[in-house]
Length: 302
Ligand SMILES: *Cc1c(COP(=O)(O)O)cnc(C)c1O
Image (cartoon, rainbow, N blue to C red; front, side):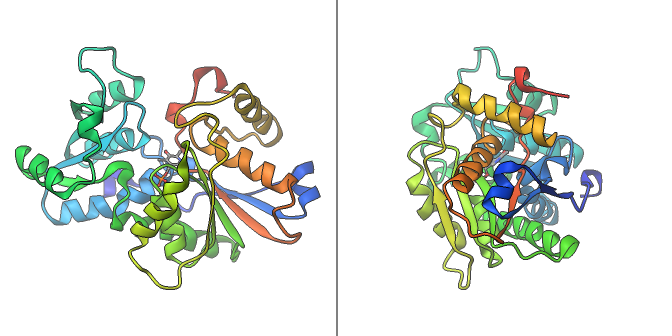
């Protein structure tokens, strides 16, 4: 792991503006986007113990799943390169000879072997029999599930919560995070903190169950508040209103959000503040989970 030294602890910044003061809360942002230039945000937190485990087992190859714009594939490719591990990315529904997404071009540049499968086959990504066969056919590499959201991922995310306590003494009423697979939300819950989880996908109600599954009957977890109305049309989709929000947020706070995850969370948080969701005096820590590699170029502000 020495070659993958991150900048820890990541800063915890207090945000101030009119909406936040009207709501009477203290809103902090945990800058995990600054954790590592390529293995950013929650992907570093989730990969940490998976990579440790792979190295301990003496594996020389990692195999994982993702879509053509997956921050997790991007992070895994960079981490594998830094640690001298081969990486195999099983990619959803892309035809190999079509133009590759910038994310996949990067993955290849890091030496990741890309294997394209149909959307139909991709649906089997959690099926133990399918995974077993797949691993066998690639000489039994170390397996990391989609999004990096394994049981080991929860431990790494839990450390982010401990880091907040250690650097500030703060025990927030809520953490806020964007949700894709639910690993990050589950990791925060697993150490007893409450989470407001903003689904980046449409029809995200199923995430409640996915998050509970990841928690594997743990006792004394935090409480989950799942918000499913801030998806802006679905995963990877957005509306002009969201892009306007990203620009406005940058103007007020000089912090860059991206349109796939973190802006949906922050938009949702500000909407909840305006709707009186919070009690005055409450403390909220919004996690900047990174993902800026996937930022729309026209939104990049200096
Ligand atoms: C992957 C990702 C998420 C979603 O995390 P899950 O643990 O899969 O729910 C949120 N934000 C960013 C920036 C991500 O890259």
